[in-house]
Image (cartoon, rainbow, N blue to C red):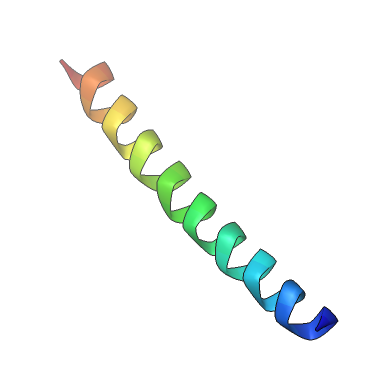
Length: 33
């Protein structure tokens, strides 16, 4: 049960990192304008 919860948390962190990179790329493109 604990390992499953840990895996769920890892998936959440992975999605958060992806969203963070997308947001940064979006803001960088806005700054270029």
